[in-house]
Length: 626
Image (cartoon, rainbow, N blue to C red; front, side, top):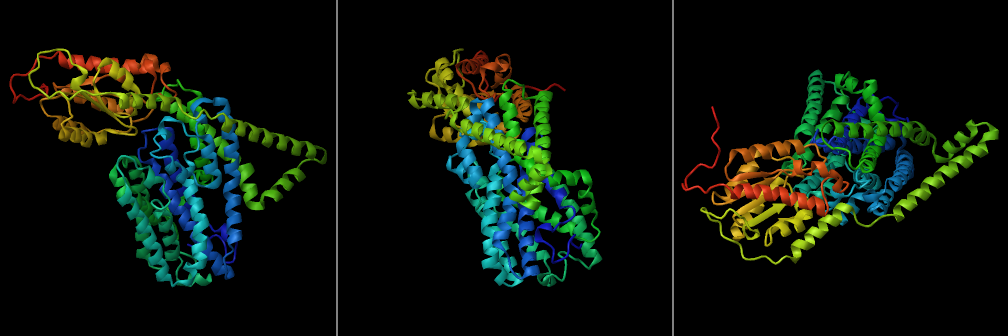
């Protein structure tokens, strides 16, 4: 398919029909993933789609410029990138920091660091430097989504230099081998350095997440046929009807596969970081290549007006959706986060996002992108009647100054520590200060109906950390193994380690339902590991996350099946007291901790009240009626 411009046209005007549709797919999956948690568990892959699109477009623009003019103007390229990215980003930072000042609370925590990261395009590395960055979950981090913009900006700085200094001097096949090697190395580095406990480093790292950009660059070089170096042949021309048909079908299947992965590929899976995201990059490249097939039906579908509208505004939509969602959620801390209420909250954020992105695109991004900063400012003033120009300039100055002032005030108002973080750290201190008695061995014939702390091992996440003081008060001597950011997938390994060390007590409490979906097979594995001589309490979860209803249903059904398994119904116990929880609606202070401990105590007491089994070979599962 020929481009929409001649080979000598401005490189920035190069356009592939249907590519805006792929952008629309990318931003839509990310928005649904964030605004409706649990609805699209793999929606984060939209970022990887963006990476491939960026790598393809930037490399194509650079090579087309050299083909048309014989050189690449680095200054011109960076000026165009600045016009494209900085205006919308600046407005976002001013508006959202000002709004954060009025919302107050946890949304102000770490705001200065986030703004520095946004302004220097180093957000991803700053997040990594913060450590495990779990408190990104407990503190509503306003500009977390800008990590991917930082990765792309770093690419925009380094990649043109490599193209000018190295790639343009290499034969085409050497270019392909070199870029392909970079992509493979980045994906392999992600796979090798991935840590199941916390994927922050490999997900945010430019080195481990650059393969999508490299795949896009590889595609650009591949599709610029031998004749395209002189601007004689448009990229991607295919003369074989079979080849066109095959690639067109492949592109359609690639889009379908991306949608399927967005539905199925959870970020908790090891496979995601050991080939899953790399597969997303390859599928996106196939879809882009299919758009270049002459007469492509896929390109026509993805270029439909509504889809293209979203794609053209995808940058603004991506910028605004997360900060708006955080601000809305922080302004409405007691708003229910399940069922239709959660959907309504996401809908409010989405409507605000669309309006902000549309206005930014129409009045900020497009004028500055086309005419530059100074020319746009002059045009705005010239359009106004002469008598009103001074007033308009003064109004704009006052508005910008006001936003800047409130933004600075927001940075100064940073409380330093979030409410949930304080509760968690207090729990951690209580655990660290505890002196534990020797473990009590598991026995199968216990007549005493009272369970003591010396008989309990509790394993959990940050929720259990927040409840630690109350759990210790209820069960002096209890052994608590809790850590931030844990999910149920880590439970088998933790239980096995305690069993091997001889520290697993007769009653095991598992509170790991907050940080992701769970599978029945994981629960069965935990039960097998603790053995028939021990009892198990599973604690359900309370959190404004879409997977919580499924988690709680799975835990309830699991507890009903086995005689030595009991459910601690923390979720229902806390519902009348949600106002006592932190703003994240996950963690809590002393009152919530007491309710959590009471729910666990009820479950432990129910287990203790059961008469012991005399037959060691008895099946502990509850018979299922026919």
